[in-house]
Length: 416
Picture 1 (spheres, rainbow, N blue to C red):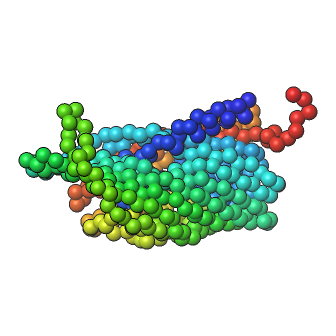
Picture 2 (picture 1 turned 90 degrees about the horizontal axis):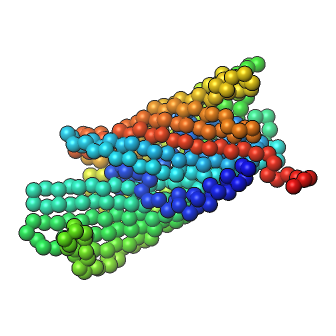
Picture 3 (picture 1 turned 120 degrees about the horizontal axis):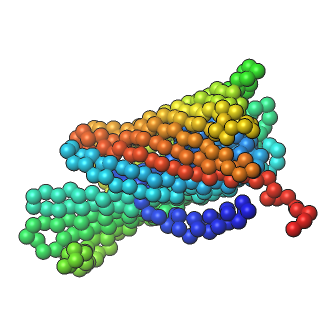
């Protein structure tokens, strides 16, 4: 039965999920190649986005070294809904967005190794801005983003040491449009920019676990992403436009402007993590990431009063299971998770750093007889500031994921 459910879900997702454009409503998605999306599962997101911990049931999308633990065939899919409030001085606007965030299939290939492949959004662009004055109207819109297909593997070297690697193919397009109108001028001007982005990136990871007492286990990890060149094919059009009676824009003249293609430098990063806990009972840990986003550019056009700095993230989180093998109480087998994160996004606009924080919690509910589970995650956070005429975003995210497990996929059955 689980196989039929998975096949049905995959067919639906493959046809619809990643055709979605603009997995964000943030005005800050204009910069670079968009707002970087969280690429882990909702189990990790509930713990502040920490990828340090994993077990034999769940696919760890953040740390490929953890795949050496995988003991069951696992399929995971997650999606979420966000309610966002945008504030600028005394102006406030509310919006929402619903997305499918990831899907992946993983399986063990031996008692010491596991692999996974899947699809996740990497960055998203989605904004609608109005910068009007008494004698002019300027509107800015952006759509698109970069998706990622990945193949990852992990191996248990022995004595608590795990290593892993991931190969990622990034692809997608980003479209920006600006319309400028002037009082007493019949025609407006529209400028369209498009970048088609493609290229490979890689990840390397290692983890070391050790029992430091009869009950306590120490876990440490490191992940390194080397810098990679990602190709951006850029296009630009400028046209005169007129608004018809329905308020729709019609092009009068379209001129293609030559724009050079660029090799977008995807920055390197390193993540260090450490935590302690009692296996199958509780765990607390922390991670720190430094990403060299100071190498970012804004593709084929130059921005004034904007600077890219190195980004950093701090994540704290953990979980608690009252009694994982309880046969008398369902809620004693529930996994309770919580976490906190703080991020310096590496964008400075008008001498203001664009920072972000989030507080999260969630539950993992056992489902079925094959160790599958349903995970719910809730997160409240804030990005940006209202200083210097900028926009502050307050968001509340609700996420749900399915982790479906089976150990019979590759076994030959004796009876049909």
